[in-house]
Image (cartoon, rainbow, N blue to C red; front, side, top):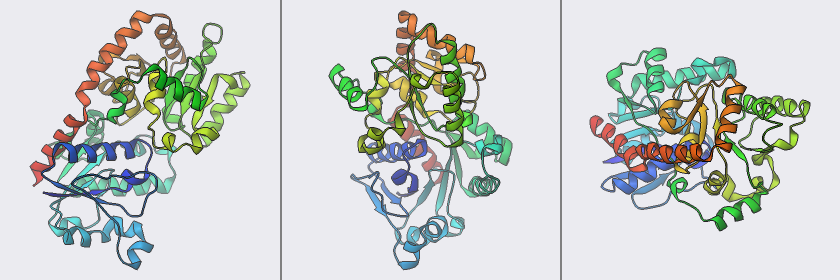
Length: 383
């Protein structure tokens, strides 16, 4: 089978959608080498590469397509799909080309979340309209819809009335490097390179209201007399970040939060941009704190579980699916509950050790091989 992918985010996105795309494509090529995989990339990338047997990158040809890569990706790519005899096309992030059904090529689309439907106030008016049109079209036109969690499946059915029999839940995996135990020397080298403290809690994610960094900072304030442990933040943002920083200044917590992504060292580090140093940062932390109000999956939680890092996360949306029985669940609106979790994990070493062991066992349900196999079954249903 010749399988094509919308690979824009695989080559250009350093966050969740990019990690999902790269890990899935590589896993499919590794575990199902009997197929050929074509990666349709609208423009050259210096950030990420996908090289290996059975993987072929395809960029737009012709002056018009190179000048207007978005038009090529959203519709004109159909000509290349036919030329390369693509049997099945997978939109890895919410979209498929307009009119692709007329080509006879089978289609699959992955829907990661419908947060723009649940929290439209967090997006611009026209962004919501655009996302709604693209997501709904993909769910209507694709032969199969992959939801990355049961929560996302329920949302697709609720907001877009997509028939349940058309949707398949295929859990994602994460980069296998998080499951590789690093030596003390390797972790110490990364900590020294980025100026990390000996002990720290960790937050990874975009700095937006839904991700809830502010309540983590409020938990730090509640713990100011009990724990002198800083928080390392990987991720960036705009208005919400300013709101968080204002809270830190007002409460004398500026030195308690390290915005690592904003440091010159991180900005200049290709290894940081590619996240190849993240396993060492995770494995050196006390706990991952991820009390998001809503997620489609929450990949940093899975990365933490593979890293044998205790996780504090929300008791809502998909987080119990991802976090499993070994995570510490809190009401994301309660800074008190977040603070209690942080204090408990830091002080109760036996409890933290049990969390690591139970969390790792749960993470083994989300291996790259299992993820690729589940997606391949969806392909076979269509083909």
